[in-house]
Length: 167
Image 1 (cartoon, rainbow, N blue to C red):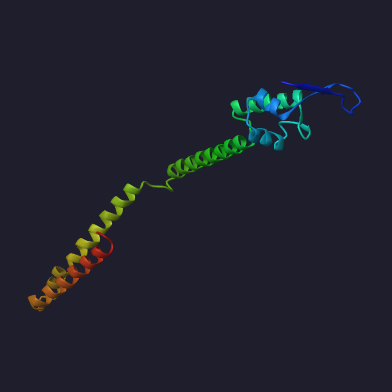
Image 2 (cartoon, one colour):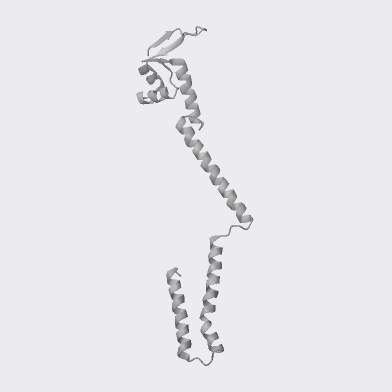
């Protein structure tokens, strides 16, 4: 592994240790594609075509790895973690909103609604089926065939309505 030194152009005169891309990839155990990615994200510091700041690039890479390990690092990891936290917060808020709505009586269980509607519809059906006998009591002069025809029409209508709604 070949490490070069050069003096930077800044005022403190601290030597900068430079390293070639092949040696930096070997040191960090990464591919050339990964090195390109690190350069684009300002983790690996390139000074020239095949010349990288060894100390700063290594420090940045170690810091990046620590961040990834703790769940904070990497742009992609940060976006995913942020998205997951936002999704979790939305789900928790929805759960609290549902719980509060139920406590206020604004929300009822679907099974309760279904039972209530089934009871109501059974009551309506029985009242409709009782119409022919009420007609017979009030209009006793009507022939039995007319009462039977009314009964048949009401039963056919109920059956038709039941078939349309899957009852």
